[in-house]
Image 1 (cartoon, helix red, strand yellow):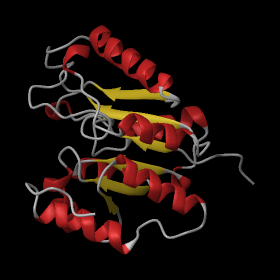
Image 2 (image 1 turned 60 degrees about the vertical axis):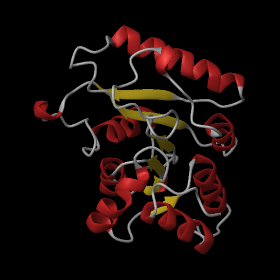
Image 3 (image 1 turned 90 degrees about the horizontal axis):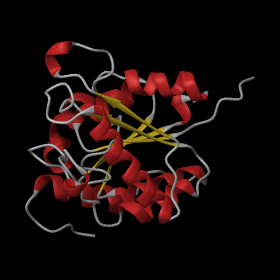
Length: 212
């Protein structure tokens, strides 16, 4: 018998806030994706702990300090809290690709660390991201993994499909993913035909408005 619980894991850039090709280096550059705050409140209301797991190579590239990153995350958490949401902990990987660490996604190190530190059953958990590297990390630990069409998701659907086939779900945005998780927790199928068709359409036509 185990007392471990499932959790919800969120990537940050492209899921909670808008991606930036120049990296988000300060709070003034941080922009919440529309609906993200309300969606995190819905996820909080499931009773499952929520963790953010984010690659932040800008730290080791010298573009921002750990202190500046922590300031961004403190302000982000404050805004989430004010909207009724709660993030249990934020994990970040500061390493660049060439450093070959075990925490930078697609490696699952941050997920495994959270599981050890918080008694999380990853097989009962959900992981939401916007890139094939997120999907790789989630699938590798047996989590129910969802690719969003926000952020880089529209351009990462085909690479993810090529690598992982039917081992992940697709959602239009974080609100859509929240609904899928709510369905799953009530014993219903996590992916409806309508959601999947819409997400696939967005991936096939990344410059069009979503079809819902």
